[in-house]
Image 1 (cartoon, rainbow, N blue to C red):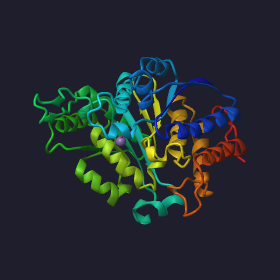
Image 2 (cartoon, rainbow, N blue to C red):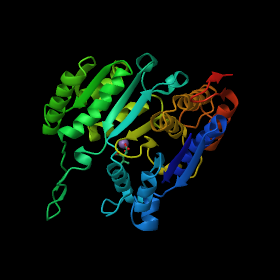
Image 3 (spheres, helix red, strand yellow):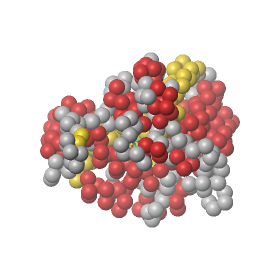
Image 4 (cartoon, protein in one colour):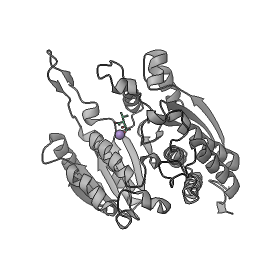
Length: 369
Ligand code: IPM
Ligand code: MN
């Protein structure tokens, strides 16, 4: 295959972790005879510094003409400590999601046997937990109008807005996803309070009855879902929910695996799909070569799966990540005391593992030697 990949490293630890993701992609290219053309774009705080815009048009054009976007993280403490800042890095991420039409954010939560002891939950609760959160990404309170301040500045408001069409397209994806997994969808809302949640519930029920009655469907209020994610995570298969609930629940869900640094995501929709770790820019670690690159490397695996339809390559990358954890080749967030490896060591190890251990790629033989 021959693909164009837009590389948006962003801020904080973004560049370091994206470098490791690219090592894995290059190893696959070499091993499988694929050609990838990488082009870098700026986004986030670094783009504000250079252009005044956190998602410059040039970056958007690059994304539009690419086959996939590999993205690191955005954010900078100087904005976090200044709530009056007019332009913020996060606006760049929201603009990218909106302009690329990325209405679904897929966040798979799976546990790794070598890391079970790192989970804040008891092993018997978390062992075997394997679910996917499908978060609506371009609607709800993140984008709803009107929003702002009263004239005297003492009152602020945000609006949560959803249309049936927005609910249907993301829910359809969740049902399709469930059919390929354990055939169960949990729709999370706050229908006892919110009008938008009642529209969600009604719309999900109608779609289920019309087209997906073979899929098991349940509804949970978001507070209950938050509780069950930590008390009984194994009960979930596919969770579908609105933007803000999905944001909060996925941070919660990510840590039950042992570290947030492990979790990848795929944002898909109308135009080019974006692949990014769910962790943020982690400014305290920036430039120190200590951040966990696995979330990004596993996001590269999702890129092969979703954007390139190359399941075997995705499988190779995942195997390499699992092997690195089993070998103790991990960063400080998941290492035993005193046995931490650096970000780049983990990336090199994984690329090397891909080169050494596999031959055969999509369309060919996949054999582990
Ligand atoms: C995420 C992040 C973003 C969000 C921030 C950085 C705007 O937390 O991707 O989950 O809230 O969506
Ligand atoms: Mn978040």
